[in-house]
Image 1: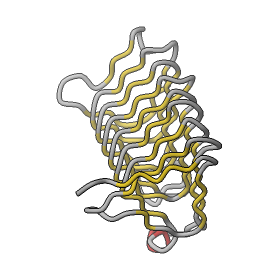
Image 2: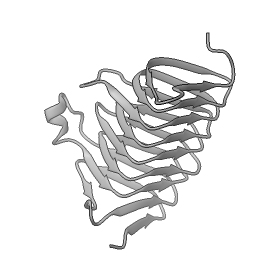
Image 3: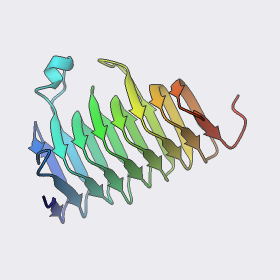
Image 4: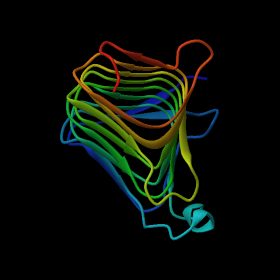
Length: 182
C-alpha cells in the first residue's frame, strides 16, 4: 500500500499517548520548521510504560530540533539539521537513525544503523527497566560516547574522541577507531 506523509510547516508536537499509522498503513511525519516533539507522561515501571508511550509506524524527518520521550517508532529517523534528543525510561526504534548534529539517545533499544555526522553521538542507559541495546552498526563522525549499552554490530568512530563503556559484540570487527584506544 501507499505510504502517507504528514507535512507540517510549523513543526509537530504530540502530547500524551498517541498511535500514528498502523503496521500496514504507515504515516511518516515531516516537520518543515520548528522541529518535532513527542511528550508523554513519565512511566514508573515497564507495565506503566505500556499505557504512557507513543507508537509511530512511519519515518520521522526534520531539519530542526527533535525531542522524543517514551516512544516506539517503526521507521527511520532522518534529521538534516538540528539536534536529536531521545529520553524517557524506555524507547524502541526499529529503523535507521541518521543525524547531522548533536545526538543524545538515552534508554533506547535500537534495531538499525545509527550514524551521526554532527558534533556528538551519545548513547546511554540510565535508570533502566532493563539493559538497553543497539542491534546494528554505529558510526560517529565526531565525538562518540557510549555508556552502559550493549552493541551488537560494528562501532566506528571517525572523529577525535570516543569513550566506550558497555558490551560490544560483532561477527568480525566490534570496534573501529582511527587512534589507539587507551
